[in-house]
Image (cartoon, rainbow, N blue to C red; front, side, top):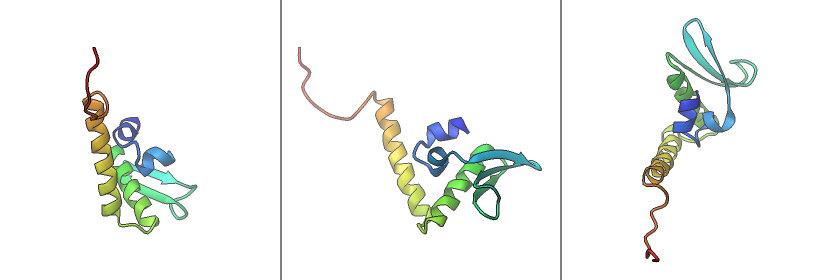
Length: 96
């Protein structure tokens, strides 16, 4: 779960910190006390369940999951590019 949240820091999973558990070989990510009352994601791996939770979160908000996740992905890719390059992409003079 930690690696997914690091890779997707602005995702609903990273921001909301849902519960994660394994039930009958299926990973369940749940925000609330029960599947019937809350938002849940199910999957064969932790990452798949967290991704499914994120999609359900966007659906519950009334947004298109595709649009919400695309915006999230774009922000995270931009942030990853800044981290890899060692900071922001500002261009300026080097003072000596």
